[in-house]
Image (cartoon, rainbow, N blue to C red; front, side, top):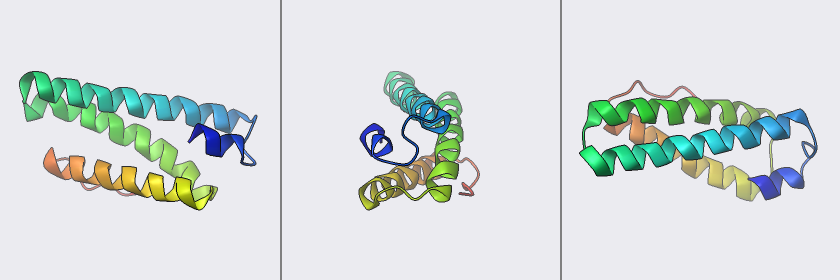
Length: 98
């Protein structure tokens, strides 16, 4: 994502900085999902981290929809959204409204 942003009209903007922060937040939340699940395999305890990942994903998605980046980035983001949708379903969270 960083490389695509560097080649986009967002390069050097506050929105680029915010997207990078959101991407890091999503990565941290997903790491916590993995760690919590591997440690305890307790859906209610892991659900909180899944919800955090979805919130970060929604923030990223708003920009991805508003500003079409290159097709590779869009495909990668579609895959991430699909994974977040599967996690929401697996952890019995409400359907994500992208």
